[in-house]
Length: 249
Image 1 (cartoon, one colour):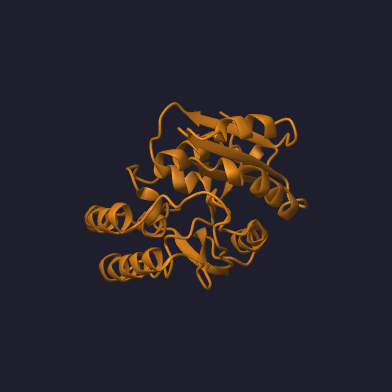
Image 2 (cartoon, rainbow, N blue to C red):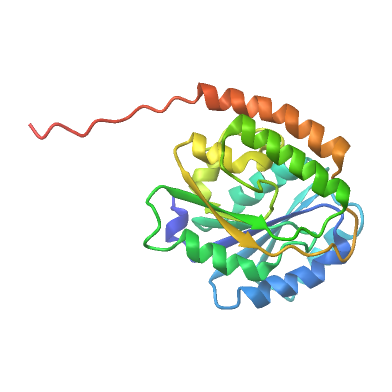
């Protein structure tokens, strides 16, 4: 089987979307403008959209040869969309961002440079974005602060903003993680559980220009706190054995 490292793309950009028809064209143009100097492919995962997202993506493929589309027959959630996008990717390094336009694609090269810096630690597996001056409603900011506080106290993952969709990570490290619904919210802790290092980088955050937010206190904060207990369980039962070097004799 061919390794992703031997394939032609240096970076795979994965964008999960559901009912984001109004943001498709503008974000596609921004991504291509931001990554013009990089060798990349772009994978959109349409998670069962019902608002014309599929039609927008189909039309865009004629304009953007780098674009590939994975379509879910019905919505399976953001974690499933990310997993299928990363599984379909051809590059060793993955960049993810949200499809609502609030992440700035121009930050991607900055994260890639940190992740692929020859001086970076050998065990670096992820560079996670940290949103500056969040442009969200007070409900989303409040639920994010509470969730981050509880997560930091419980998981000790030293990640100030695990909810930022802008991340760069190794494909093989991601596919080795335990898979479950909502896992995308805990990627730094899961990477660390497997012995990988996570770096952080400040990134821009923008107001949503079109469409509607999918998360609030009811379907993000409380569910996220329950999920943390499961991730903590995984952390406590993750045991890594140190391998001794071969005896030269």
